[in-house]
Image (cartoon, rainbow, N blue to C red; front, side, top):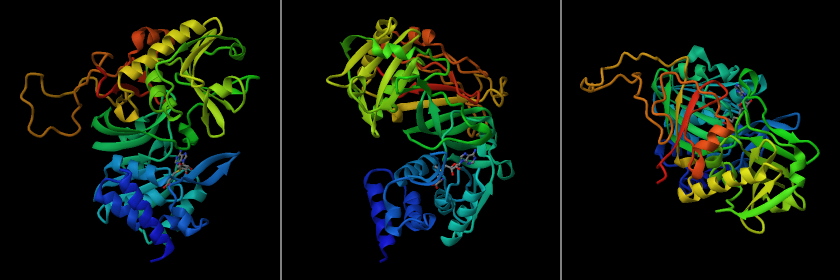
Length: 449
Ligand SMILES: C[S@@+](CC[C@H](N)C(=O)[O-])C[C@H]1O[C@@H](n2cnc3c(N)ncnc32)[C@H](O)[C@@H]1O
């Protein structure tokens, strides 16, 4: 057996053992599509490390990569595609995942993959040909508009990060079809699998944490990161209208109070950071270089430091990990912010420290949603076999609005409103609006007692 084949076998065995691969379909695809043929510049055996491999860099930023095998496996399981499906992939890269999808859908299915860059589409075609996979349509297109010529699709998978569920993707999905996308929700990138339950309605049944390069072109998200001038720190705000505070407050530490937990660095985006950010858009992540003082008390992250914070207009509070789990006040608004942050941390611990996998999202696309669905009257007997495109009944959020429709368009919550709803550290699972105008209703599930 050749080295590359042995390395691939080992990788797949590891992915099965780690629970990343669960179905025989995904396993067979990973076993039979040779990743090294999609990485012609990498030593064949090295192509089977469980790592993403950057393949295109622009302005010092990676804009394309061959994705990490464990993430690809997780997403293929979330997508749940099968023989005969029509699949659109947005973000071809070098074509590896498109090759896997072609294996999953078989001869009776169709895979279309698009990338915004011509050179990547050409490489995709070359690599797929080298792997002997002929049944993939690879096209240069800005996938923010989907790819109408191939619609409707049973499955649409984005392998590139976005801040919004765009109406074009939903409209191009067949009734009952699934949209899988790396979606930024209050600063956390989540791989969300959504089933289309009505013309403009989707429900998630699987959410995982992820980290993908960001969509470019017409649907690129506005950059919301803010550099705190002169401080070396960058703020990643959770909400679009989050308050900002002057950098100098970080030189003015106030009192410390013990926090219910310190969390780990991945918790900043996945566990407690996601919990706090959904409860209050004034939450932020603070990123900066390693160093003494404040940096030394933050969590280590890729050669730098990171901390979770909550902003007030004239101050903030930070969760620090060293020497113990501590919430520290900064500036005149610090005590207020520290009260709220400490309460949210306590709420997360009391709820059993939920992570992204415990989250469900409902999505309503106002322009596609039918405000007067011609469904059966409430007292009518349920049809035996309801049409898959019938609008699903609105599912009330645990402590959110009683109904999500029709077509609710609420502004991004203000910090004050969210703070009021989050009194006592419970999450505010009310609706929020993403950058594409889609209404998202997050619900922690199982709902904390
Ligand atoms: C992480 S890579 C894709 C990985 C790939 N699917 C694989 O099999 O490993 C993300 C890709 O999305 C592409 N991309 C970014 N913005 C895009 C857009 N608006 N439309 C289509 N592709 C886009 C990038 O050029 C990049 O190749």
